Image (cartoon, rainbow, N blue to C red; front, side):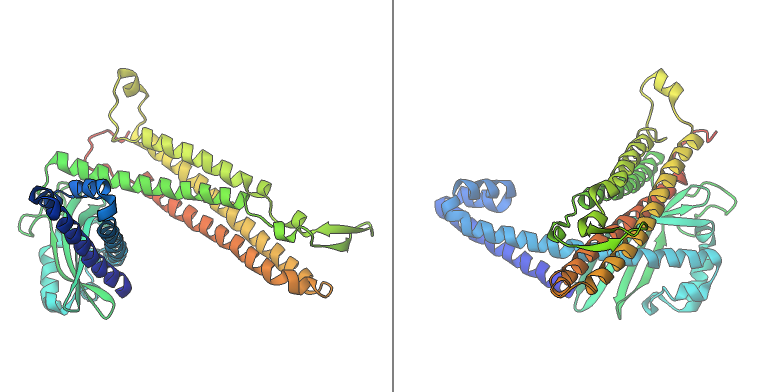
Length: 407
């Protein structure tokens, strides 16, 4: 991670140097050109392209700097998000359970003592109660003087479907993120009683709906991306080549006592073996498209669409069908992987006992190729699992900003 930060810093300076160099070239032509290059980035790009012979070097330096800067910051920021979310979720779960000791494990000493945390928990009991989930909407992280701190905003999701904005400040110490400050969208004094379903928020109803819809879209898009990636992997498995073993084979005796020649390529997984996986993915993508087109946030445009509109329970059932399909495909791939690994072990055993020259020529290459094939299957299983979890989350989605009858 330190390497990424160094790359980002180096990229920032390279981008600045390239930009200044380009501006100097422009100023030599005229003051107006120089000012435009400094103040209008798109004009600087236009200037560099139209004066390519002179501007090539500074433009390339700026471009490399920009790539390094973005390439260094984005992974760093995404890693912070993935590390901060479990801290905030754990803090909320402990607060919902009233477990101050567990909650304090997420609390940095700078934020206060355990007694002060207990007081904060007591004052905000309503905001912790009935906690179900959380989602992040923005995050940032920066390191200064060797101290890494982060900031996160998002929504707390409650069991009744309502949401409350939050802000969290964190600090990284000994590679562990801890909270230095945490605020709900409303103060403890303004929070509604636990028995009510309305929680005060600084956002209007329309803004809350937009936030909710955005989170829904992100969840759906992420699920679809996982399914699409499985489809891509299925095509890669279909095109997987064992051509380097085309002339490898052995004699074996069948159940009738007849000796026959068996080619290695004939027993290894073929394109036809994984064709059903690609077909299943196509069906899941079609089902995912239906989940999106029928989602309750979509307003019907005609009376016919209003009449044909799915109720929320019917839409949840559609999500459940998608989840079940993904789970079934995952089980099928897991079974196929187990059978394939068993086959690979048998082939390795045969190659290990073959006549001189066969083992040395083919065994190591086969181990490498079979490992590549198994890795692809592992990636398929992982993506299916992620997609299944997101389909489950969509099925249980709480449409807090909608007034549609669940029946």
